[in-house]
Image (tube, rainbow, N blue to C red):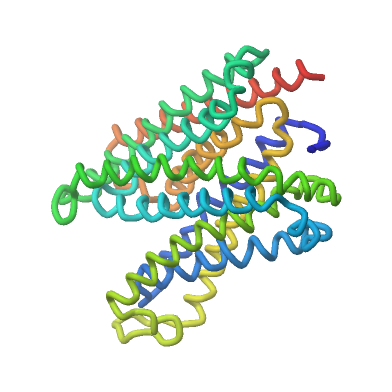
Length: 355
């Protein structure tokens, strides 16, 4: 049950807000001092994937305990397990960056996630064929194809940037075979998050019956995001045990950099807030997308790549690059904008046809 009035234009705008939060959530990490990766990652994950979803549901879902009592247990379990798979994908994404760099990882993983996370859920439900025969479907397909090209173009531009800024990119831990394998795994498992939300729809329906309205999806995050936190926490705690770094949570190790433990915690909290912000606004956008709401994932991924590169340009990360690199990223961003416009128009046409 979802009586919320559709408004795809507003839905895309809300997806844009969520994508902006996602694109900027890791900027605080640059200011974290004398914490290992696993300490920072575990801390921000505890907020964005565990604490904040519970707090968000408590604040927005009426009669939350009653909703949890009435919701189907199978839906809770499926959403949790699929969320756990998404958490593994996030870890694979982080490791892949070590081997092939951020840009190639982003292009492969996000591009694959965008396509699979958009098309497979309606395909599994058996509704894809019928849906794509409706008005506006041609624009939707064009938007997904153009968006995939734009993501690949942004990844290529990012690779050019990495080569421009460091002549030793191919040294050290660079391994195309390992990196591509991990980024493909990350793309597939990241797409599973769409399944986690889909699996949680019966829970959201119960929340709607209790008057949750546009906030209905917040209850699903309790299960999908907790699953992601579990797998992330297991990996981070394993790294802590291996490197004996768990004590960093309460006392900074010695180091040449001036640092404050309280500031590191604050930066991790801000990262968690921003990362959770993408889920919060994703739900608000998704419930307004109407007939083609399965395109939410593609819109979110495309906008995420668009905004992350714009943020990088604003932070002057591209200033030392060649003209070819500047031209390539500019063209890729224009293609991404075109993809968003195509998807928005397709959703608008489809919504008009159902009214």
